[in-house]
Image (cartoon, rainbow, N blue to C red):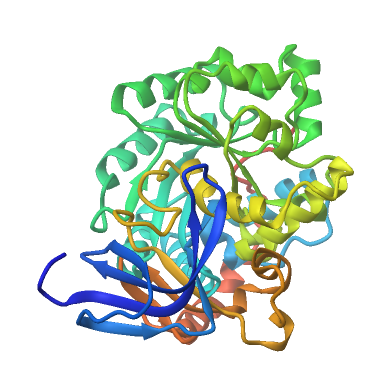
Length: 448
């Protein structure tokens, strides 16, 4: 304990804790002391110490900040432009033609709006996989959120696509006072060929970088890959060496039974991100096999994907939907429980983005990424089972305060680091040029 005042003391809250078996529990009337961006102590009872800032959190629950494990933040600019379409038409007729118009300014404004939405929804870290990522990194540095960033590429970009992704990852690693971590970001096995994937795996091992990509997104992709190449997308990742790296696989609703031993035997650290709202919207026949992955010890992090497909960046909703869809698809109301859903939203999501030792729980030595959730509203009372209240009754709008690295980014629902009306106004002026599809170009062809 230092004699100087703490940076922040939060008092009177109920705090979500993990025990040594990683089970979820709650401690009432807790005090959290934060110094130099790190949680110094979590105790019960009053706090006598001095602090530069204090937050009275009576009636609120302190949770580890949520992690959005796979998104395309700038795509909030495309929210609602490609509705009620099958995947192939969604990509080829709308999204990929519009994305050929994207400028760095569009990416910056989209990222700023996305960060505002996430901070308001209790997301303290997001994993982003997109283009013009320098613009996203600048927004992250400015607004105070944490991010895991990768510059995406297709094989159609030629070798310079891969080189640009590597250059970005090396240059931005540890930026924004350590809040930015980086990854290599090949788009997917259906847009990046085996030679490029193998070269990416080699670069990942050489430079100690993880890989974040889409794979086995849906059942069609898995079946098309089998028909054309005799292997599933997951088997492509094995034969190209991607599974020998630390890899975050987005979606995986097309993971087949034959893929499970391949994932089990991977020598790298494998994680999967699930974004269930989009799967329902595209009417995909299957969802991420969370239970089968759980049985293999593979963490499944919660995600939203981009707002062009998901329409929101609400990880709170992803948590509730994941729990409900798992009950429905497994036919078992006991899986997954609210406590299991909270585990996916906290520690497992932190592990998925490679931050399992840094964030994901409220404990001494962890970075102070904390959200305070107000449970005094009529829709969250009375509380008989706190975990169930959080997962199935509370909403992202019940998050009152969002803290990253000990800095308050939103206090009592007031955003402190982003001017939303200014961003919305500027984005509106740019929208007509962004939406123009008259040029007939598209950045890629979806053919699976």
